[in-house]
Length: 466
Image 1 (cartoon, rainbow, N blue to C red):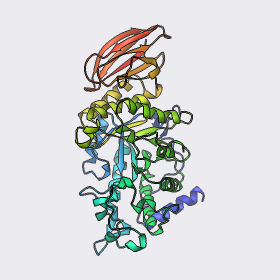
Image 2 (image 1 turned 90 degrees about the vertical axis):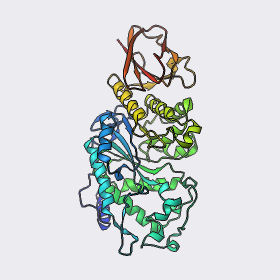
Image 3 (image 1 turned 180 degrees about the vertical axis):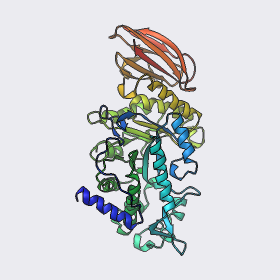
């Protein structure tokens, strides 16, 4: 089907399910979010490169009544990136579907309040130049207690029965076990035409709203352990229904080990997935967190794409503490991501992450201040230039001979190899804890130079050729 017919079909289908009649933008738009032409490891927006940084208190931010002030707070500290699941499982959330006269959901009609909230979020972020990474499906919406109130549960709607769909009344297992037939409906799997009809309609409705905006990235699922066929189907369906607009899609796999085979479904298919999200790597602590990310970057070095981290885990609550996934870990992972070449980094919501809190605020402020001196897309990870950097002691990104950014998670001392460089360098410390610039210092090339932190806590050193 050609692009014109595809767009026409999308608009007709959208209208049949009560979509807005507004025009959908089509064709390439140089102002839209896309990989940076000069360095495709990063994003550009409105024809300018940018590093995406975020910290928000909710995943489904479009459902928040205080979204405007929350976005204003994020914007004021230099944040420009949010995650938005299409979830509706929290108390007080709007559902996507209308209620019939009998009190059950009618999947053939929309609850316009839900979609107006979604469009309002896109409008507010667009006005503030904030990029939105949408997750269309979330496994946690359709299992355990959430299944009891789910509109897709046959007992809750007027559109189909358990017998017709093969669905059950209970899915008590953790959704990570991927036992819910909701995620097997596509033709290559269960070919559940009845349920798939309504899933397609939901995605088409979503696109009829989101394609109006240029600040949107798409992700199929939240941390899924699902099949490759499921992800492939929806990636192709979204692209076929994009009306010819150039969009970027990924899938977020659940396995914490990004070297696991499941992640190769995304890493090894640039023709399908325009970027990679390895948020689950943030479960991994210390130097291994860095090394595993380097595995992904090395794998795509000949065909680079943006690598995002839409969630950074770590807080001072619950089970995470026993695993070392603390608030300090979250800040360290954020900083490692930045020097490691990630295109985006966002602190996860509380209690599993720091959200928009003082440590995340100061972390974002620190990076934005560093960007006043050097842009991250001008640098490359350069651990080979450090000696005596043991374990998690220090990390380096550099444009060798010109610009160096050195990160210490805590007190430490390393040697920077300037042996092939002549002349002097000016350096300055900046505290991650406070976001404030610290002491200046001067060093000279011609050999290894010892650099030691000025005090406790995490630090960056920005070193520039004079």
